[in-house]
Image 1 (spheres, rainbow, N blue to C red):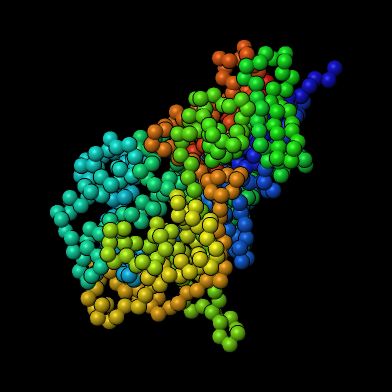
Image 2: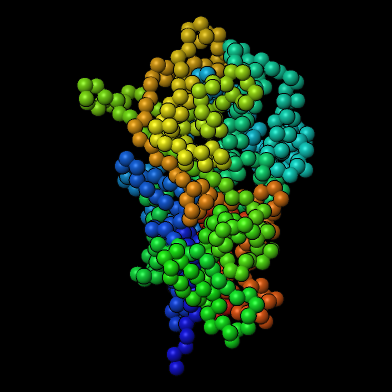
Length: 535
């Protein structure tokens, strides 16, 4: 007698989906128990991992870093497959080794003596918020940290810092800047950097209490020399041809939370954009939180689930945050003379931007608004002709709508207000302990020839970049995201584990990361293996 295999369909061929498929397919005895398929709406595997090449350079359009190598499964895989070393140059191959130059709007180079105290303050505040240190300093003791958001907490931290400075207000030789306005702008630079880490477009929406639950692995943060996609390809390599089906976008998931088992031979039916459908015993949903948000809104024109998900699930989906972070790559135009390309005598510096705040009368009106929360612009590695900048929130979304020439003009205008010539009289007035002219880059014009940008916010398969715990939500919502349907207490009404959920937004302590997605894929695969007593 042939025993019917349990049909398992995994939606999404990203880190979570392929990890689940790998685990289910390779488990001992599973081939006799399971019929496994992975359906992917796009034309490639990887999901929010997308290694690409631009002008002959290896870059990452999505996930970039291994966040801590101590205990990271991603690091372990990359090491095992030899992906950590390459003869080809790659993005961040030499990291950011402290050689960056911080410049204030108007072309004022800031010394470490000016920047470092604010950098230390910001890091101390974030370390406290993340539970790494206690409030043993004067600033932390003065700050009222019963606030709801990280943004409120950081503002109280900088306010307390200014109180401790006893009202010092002037900066010698910097006519545009007072001490307070300069420190405020430097602090804002670090806040904007934090926006790209968390994907929270506004730190006032980032929950303070939940920040301490987020966990990082110890050790350095590194990039993968042969590309993040090499890890995905390794995970997928054990799967036989045809198991992963590309171009299969799911438009509706039908499930049966209230019918008796005899009436449901295969309780879940997936409908696809091409008009086809497939039935399954179990479906692992690994689509992004952005897609879940769009598909579960009460007024959604195309609900993803039928019947709708229970309220505990939809409320968690609604409360959690899901932001947009995009990467902008620009290629420096070659230096030419008489039609010949010349060797560039000046490399583009690793620039950190300190912008005037909105209430300053010294703000350069020609700098576009979408550049004003950009933290940096720097070569992807030393001496590379490719430059990289990160944008988050509404600026990142706006970037997706801009034409290449608009981007080039906006970036060029911004640079011209930072790498500008200073007169000798202005330079002689500068305080060497605070600010200096941009000696190494005066009178140098940099132009750009090509642009490449990620567009995670408008991509219908993602609708954003990664999740965060928003004000009003909590780690319990992340746990609710991971709970399978129907719930155990409803087992008398219908088969268990019809719909399972994986992906970075379903992991309480490692959300927003590739390793969080990896762990979630293992979790749901193991849940099914345990259900079938397959260990």
